[in-house]
Every structure is written in structure tokens, then in C-alpha cells.
Image (cartoon, rainbow, N blue to C red; front, side, top):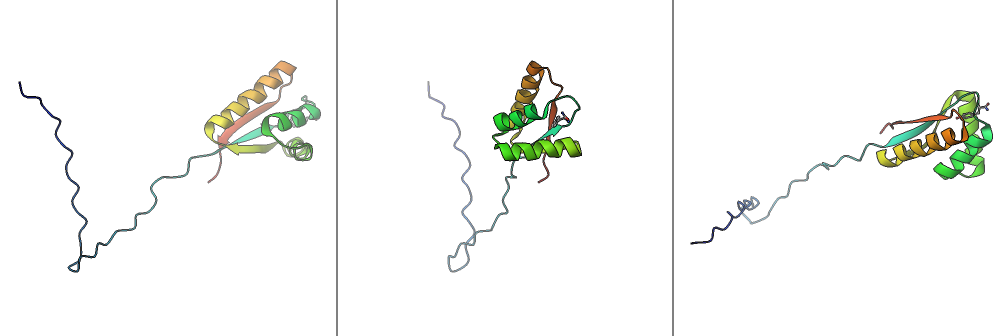
Amino acid sequence: MATKFPKPPPVRPIEPADSDGTVVLERRTQRTKPPQMYQVVMLNDDYTPMEFVVMVLQEFFSKDLETSTRIMLKIHLEGKAVCGVYSHDVASTKVDQVLDAAAKAGHPLKCVCEPAAL
Ligand code: TYC
């Protein structure tokens, strides 16, 4: 019995060339969009100690003491602040880590992840 081979793929047509043999390549606009990024926003409440928020910002968002204190005070005074911008996976992991640490410590601290403006 004869072996059946798969059909070869169609041959790509050769680029059109000018009469002198020059090949003109079209410039294509970039097709891949940059991935959507997500910001982790921490929310104020009346009960979580300031020191705990500062610790969370240092521990999970790798901020130094001064930056953590500044972000914590912004949340305290304005109601919320962005702690960082990440890919969706990383942002949602950080939200989980914060909520988990807060629940274990008995604090109502909340944070959410939302699409960041491009
Ligand atoms: N408002 C809290 C207090 O006065 C401190 C606080 C800051 C809580 C930031 C949450 O995300 C927060 N103890």
C-alpha cells in the first residue's frame, strides 16, 4: 500500500519586484498591543493601625520606610492611593497577600486591583 504524505503548505508568492528587480517592502504598523497593566489601590478605614499599613507597603510592595509612610498618609488623608502597577497576575497576588495578612492580624484593611490607564 502506498504511504500518504500530508499536502505541502501553499507556496508564498514572491514579493512583487520593479522592472529593475528592486523589491519594495511595505512598512507594517506594530500589531501587538502592550499588555493591560493593573494598579493595586489601597483603601482607608478607621481601624487598621498606620504602622500595619506601613509594614504591608514595605513587605508586599517593596517600598522603603519613607515611601511607605508617604503612601499610607495619602490613603489616610485622601481615602485611597495606588501602591503599584503590575501585570494582572502579580497585582491580584498582591491583593490576596494584603487581604490575607490583614485578616490574620484582625484588621479590616482592604485593597483592590483595577485596570491602569494606558
Ligand atoms: N485611617 C487609619 C487610622 O487612622 C490608618 C490607615 C491608613 C488605614 C491607610 C488604612 O489603607 C489605610 N488608623
